[in-house]
Length: 192
Image (cartoon, rainbow, N blue to C red; front, side, top):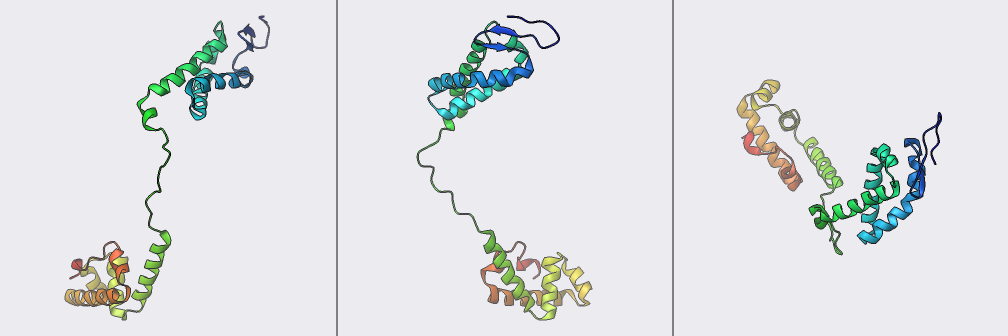
């Protein structure tokens, strides 16, 4: 049955009347259940069958004018579905990506809250330092200044900056313990 005129050409081939691109959704709805059952019978896996059908119908949509022109569009799409199922089974990733019965628990991840608590307690400890030691620690580790820059900012010698930093780090280690060691760049050797 062929119709001519201003609307799209309709060709009665196979089980479903096929027209140009605007009728793909109707074709998809009419043929999906049958194609899925075929894919499921071949794949034996509902997920694999659905993946194969989705890939085949996506390819059919991309080549819809060629599918419409085929003598038997259902046979054309069915062949695409079968090729998708068989092609997937041949792929090396398919063999590697099969789920296992027991995946196991993922390794525990450090808690974000623990890091916040450690930093909070460290800032409390920094606030409890004498003003000169606190200034050295803040300028070195928060502002990332060198010993020379800290000495210039505080109006003292480089040796004073080193001794104040050493005393401050000692006080912080006594009050915070491991929290200080966990911070990046807290190597006392840079200041000493």
